[in-house]
Amino acid sequence: MEKIINKIKTSIESYLTENIENEDKAIDFILYNPKTNESYVLASNGVDEIILFAPYTKNYPKGYTNVPDWDFNLDEYFFKELQNGYEIGFITNDVNCTKC
Image (cartoon, rainbow, N blue to C red):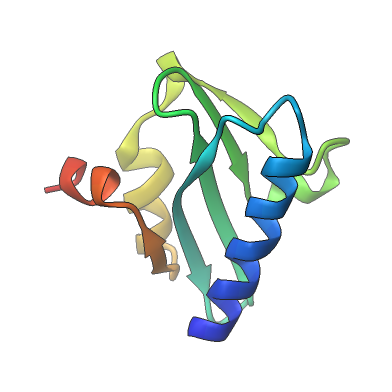
């Protein structure tokens, strides 16, 4: 799984740095579902801009969706996906401490 997570991380980080609109964002966590080979990636600027790369956003014009900071709920965007079969592939210390 580590190889897959590294590939996802590299791909998203490359996209973020190449896109002027999102170059200030970094990956907060990567969830991966080994049964479906789908990933769920949340990136933010650490303040008020959050974007989500998820299976359902692949059909969006940009390939991701903006998550309004007022709508972000860690239970919905993190724990719910863990209950749906996703596993933690990568998580920053900030997010890890938030869920404690």
